[in-house]
Length: 167
Ligand code: IDP
Ligand code: MG
Image (cartoon, rainbow, N blue to C red; front, top):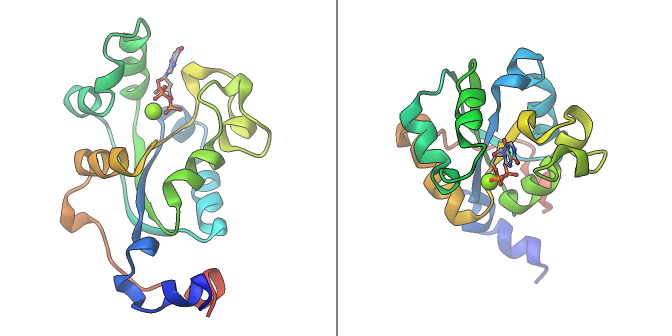
């Protein structure tokens, strides 16, 4: 049986198709009116938007989100950057979404990010690199929990499913 046939069976209950990741359109990108460009890339790829909000991040959530970087010399500047204005937090769902999204976002250092990636197309410097994307399925699970209540995630069937995953 082709892999997609086995994935298709079970419909919305299929775990492979329900992988989720957190994407944040950072404050520099909101100021630069890039929210639509970022959303468009994930929509066109075929991923499903299951959560989205515009908010001003406070210190508490940023400390949780960037806990692993708290000893870095750039940490105070990172907090100032991420709280400099509103950001858009989103949850995208789909097959292999964590790894695919990281590839679409590009290298952390924008100067190294390949053209065609979000950072490679919209950003020059690591200190203003436009987007965040979770780096593993485990991280995504944790990060989504920081930014979203369970009831803010919407489980819905997308009508294009046969065209994005096959019969
Ligand atoms: P990632 O966003 O590609 O996962 P991380 O290493 O997890 O990269 O770093 C988180 C964020 O911290 C980066 O996206 C960037 O905003 C910021 N950052 C990382 N390294 C530097 C740096 O050397 N200078 C300034 N900011 C940095
Ligand atoms: Mg990271």
